[in-house]
Image (cartoon, rainbow, N blue to C red; front, side, top):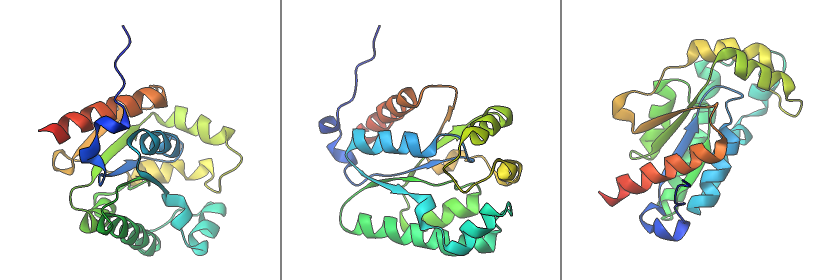
Length: 184
């Protein structure tokens, strides 16, 4: 039995929704975020494109970013989300958002943001990263991301999905839940 698709026209209350698709590298953040943005008719924001050159150079060299390295990046993302919300527009942001403190920076700009956490096993994600050749994030940094990852807590408006589900299914399930929440 096929599930009914939720069309964008049926979710007008979500026009200013802000969704952060989070997780470690290789989990499919960009793919799922793009699907959600299209489905919900929201702007897609690629978090990686906001990294300063110094951060990219460190990652290319196989050096894990510190909290200090991430601070200006997170502030730039928060400013972008705040600007969109100020215009009455929503967005879907792909961003690792590994630690609660990082998500709190984003939440300081948009207190009611939604989190979609993509969870997967190290070996699966490592193999995905090894197959990528177009990204500056080397597979060698995956362990540091798992070490930094703090799972979203109950008060963070988060949903978690296993990355073994097809991206389309994750987007569909998230949209259904989001739509139901907005109808309350």
